[in-house]
Length: 342
Ligand SMILES: Cc1cc2nc3c(=O)[nH]c(=O)nc-3n(C[C@H](O)[C@H](O)[C@H](O)COP(=O)(O)O)c2cc1C
Image 1 (cartoon, helix red, strand yellow):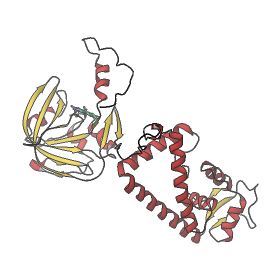
Image 2 (cartoon, helix red, strand yellow; image 1 turned 120 degrees about the vertical axis):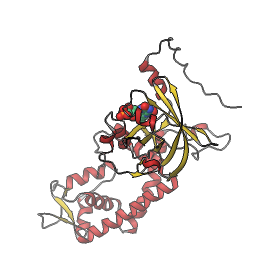
Image 3 (cartoon, rainbow, N blue to C red; image 1 turned 90 degrees about the horizontal axis):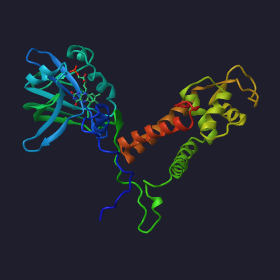
Image 4 (cartoon, protein in one colour; image 1 turned 135 degrees about the horizontal axis):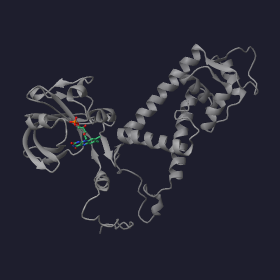
């Protein structure tokens, strides 16, 4: 028996004359990938159009389709081209999508784009999740669009996650399997889609800060010292006050003793000051020594390893989505904290 989910009733059916804006919004709830489809016309004109109407049709023979607005500048080129190429854009190619969605001539669209030539000299873009080179099979009427059906002649692909389009915005897809499910009979609030967000954030933070602590211990640094070196590693010459504030965002107290200890160990130097730092030296500027730079290099290398491990364990799209969601969370809940505090 499939579990029934209770939802508010759908809005009333629209009157028979569709409101174009509302109709577009309804269609926009259907989440798609994003493609750029390219062709070279008989007269050598280049065409490239961003399209999310792309879809698969048949496995045998291998057929795909998409629809092109009749008002498109590229209509004649696509209607007469024997071949066209579908580029399934990667998650970081939203700029390419916007570029090919501009209503300018093909010549202008390709002016500052690197491409190679595929079948029939069709322009092929790079950096995509997948590319399918197709031969035009049929063209059908589709109201204010034409529907192009193509036979896939060849394709190539890579593991980069695709770009997603949802309700008029670019997005990234993560899969929802492999999340926490409570054992039978346990409180459902423990399952991933019901767990309190605060609990998940706190647990993630606790687990993760244990990892950072272990990293710091490897370098014989305490939490405050680790943060001071990380902060100076991204920008030197910060003031003591700035370092205290940045460490505060991460919930760590930095006192003058942590600074003085790092000076004594030869990792940092206080500019324009002979003796040790005192709490009122708010504006004293601090920099790294050559040994300090070496320690920072080790810290950053360790952090890269941790990032790579997260990417590998969670999956690349999930790790990217996590980064987006957490930065959105930080921006929304702590607007005074700079996006990248360090
Ligand atoms: C995400 C996205 C998806 C789009 N999908 C389509 C589509 O499937 N068909 C279409 O004709 N136009 C689509 N467009 C609009 C065209 O990319 C845009 O009108 C483009 O300027 C057409 O180029 P042209 O008029 O220079 O040929 C889409 C635009 C975006 C941003």
